[in-house]
Structures are given as structure tokens and as C-alpha cells.
Length: 511
Picture (cartoon, rainbow, N blue to C red):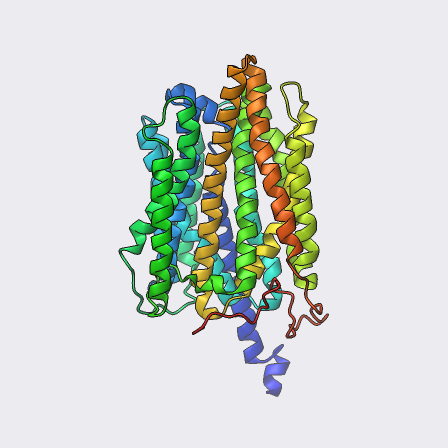
């Protein structure tokens, strides 16, 4: 023992230090890969007007290049609970990056809309594997009292990457074609694939698992039908919807109900595709519902604002991207800071003011018209982004931290699924509301610019009403009875969970 001390510490201490460094490298690589992949969710939003002209498609059709990406993720992510249990972390990472790189290459070469949409679906399939993989790895290698800081970095990936997607595409489109967005991303994706082969290690033990082949199509029909139905409402306003909107909506609701019933039945046998026993935990349930509202608002704003800036205010793609940049930077700068505050104070002191800021930013966006200044748009977007930064990290960390280790993979998959469905629904819903509002204003005799502004107002007005519901939900989030001790050792009232009127003791049976 004395020899160990003389050498600078015990063998155990040196081993733990090496393990800590290895975990940092692993999570760092996963964060970078996930950031690049999720950046692609919204990278086409500024390019939509250009794509509508080049590919001769409507706004309702063009938005599927974003909605289709999100919806594919929502369809694939429920299977990741099975995938992460059945296969090694390394093999899942390599598969995810290979799919993403292949989709990126196909998108760069796409001759038309159909091939481009297919490429986006392939990209999304890889991205869908990466997000739950990142969260599950963090839950397995990061101590509970430090998860808030790490989840703050995950929040950068989930919220900031989509937020700066429009800025990135604006900078590229200023002097290059839309295909350049994919050619630039491709070498980064290939590089991440190579580095993963060198540095990614396994931190979980694969075990036999069951994949229910009935649940997969039910999930796809459920989530896909609802989002497609919302999109069809907007397309039907212009006479472009191939089927009445109520048809996919009804199919989606029925399929989703059957999916839920089947998961509850299979959960008792440990064979659920997505173990919904996570929703039996009150803190998880509340956090998930609020996160859905945050993501719906975020993605809705990111799809509407570029169209408003270009079609109503007449700004170019570079200006559009730069206008949206401050909001993205604010989220990026605040996310780690908010994570550290969560580790110290818990969720409620952050979530409540966060929802108030989201509401304030949304209502400011309802005042935009054909003569609004760019500074007004920037200010409203920054306020909205600040609110999302203060709410998303605590809610995500609380949701996953309230589960037992045996539900980590399913909890991660559920969180990611709800985020993507909410994002896809927000994109479709905001486009629908904007289209309806614009058509109504034109019918009343407004000129095209004013009609476009009226459509934007309609979309944000509905979002403003939703933000009031978020504030009410935030009031139900109860703060911890005691703060974490200064030493960082968690006590029985650890702030790493959201407490509702239903106590955190409501764990699901069998867990």
C-alpha cells in the first residue's frame, strides 16, 4: 500500500481515474456525433422556399423534408429499447453512423423530391438510434449527482442543434446550392464513423430480448397517421391533400390506442417494444408532457420564422439564418449552466420561470406583421429560446432520473420518441395554421404580404394559448424538500426528480 501511495495513489484510484477519462471521451464522441446528426433535422428549414421553386412543390409538401425526418425518428426510436438491450453499444453506434452517412450521400445526389425525402428518412433512421444511445450511456456511466451537468450538454444537442440548423443553412445557401449542405456534412459523418470504430467501447451487457413485430407497424401507423393528418389539413386548404385529413387522423388515433394496449399487455411478460410502465411514475409522466409542449413550440417556431422572414419581410437566406442565430447561441450557452443549477436546486426553480419565458416569447411573436423590425423578431426568439433552455434540461433529467436502472433504455426511447413526435406535430401544425390563416386573409381581400403575416399570427396565437397550459403544468412541479448536500452526496430527497402531487414513490409494479 505504501508503494502505491508513493507512486501517487492506489491502484484502485488510478483505475477509476482512467475509467473516468474513458467515459469523458466516450460521451464526448457521442455528443459530437449526435449534434451533427440532429443539426440535420432543421437544416432545410431556411432552404424551403428555394426547394419549393427548384423542385416545384408546395409549402405543405416541402415541410415533409423536416416532418418526415422527425416522424421517421419517432417510428424507429420505440425499437431502440429492444436494440440497446440486444446489441452492444459499439455495434449500434457504427450502424447509426453508417445509416446517417449513407443518407447524407444520397441527399447530396438526389435528383428530385422523392429521392431527397428517401434520403432524409435514411438519415433519420441513423439519428434515431443515436439519441437513446447517448442517454442510456450517460445513465450508465455518470453518477446521479452529476447528471444535471451532463444532461445540460445533451440539451445542447437536442435543442441547440435544431436551433442553429437554419443559421447553418443560411450561411451555406448564400453562395452555394442546397446540395452543398449535405456535401459539407458528409465528411464529418464519415470522420465520426471512423473515430467511433477506434474509441467507442461497450458499457452495457447485451441480453436476450424480444421484438414484437405487431407493435412496430402499429407505432408507425399511430404516430405517422396523426402527423400526416395534421399536415393534410394545411395541404387541403390549397386543394393539394390526396385524402381528407380526418382519414389519417382517425387511423393514427386508433393505431396508437392499439399500440398502447398491446404494450401494456406485453409489459407483464417483459416483451414490450416500448415499456409504458414508465408512465406509472408520476414525475416521469409530468415531465414528458411538458417536454412535448416545449418541443412542439421550438420546432413550430423554427419552421415558421424562416418562411416569415423570407416571404413576408423579403429577407435573404443569410439574413434569415443570422436572425435566428442569437436564440440558438443563448440555448447553447445556458444549457450547461442550467444543468449545474439543477444539480444544486432541483427542477421547480428552473422550470417555472422557463415556461413563463416561453409564453412571453410566444406572445411577442404573435405581434409580428408585414412591417415588423428584425430586432423584434430577434428579441422574441431569444426570450423563447431562454425559456426552453431553462425548462428542457431539468425536465429531461428529472424524467429519466425518476426511473429504475432496468427501465433506463425504455425511458430514453420514450423521451426521444415523444420529443420527435412533438417536433413533427409542431412542424405540421404550425404550417397548417399558417396556411389556413393566410388563405382566410386572402379570401377577405388582404394583399399577399399582409395575408402571410396574418397566417404567421394565427400559428403563434395558438402556440401562445398552449404556453399558458405549460405554465399551469409547471406550477404542479414541486421543488425538493431539501437541496442536495454541498458535498454532492444525494439524500433521500434528491433534487434529481420532479415531484408532483403523486409522490415519486409510485413506481410501476414489478420494477
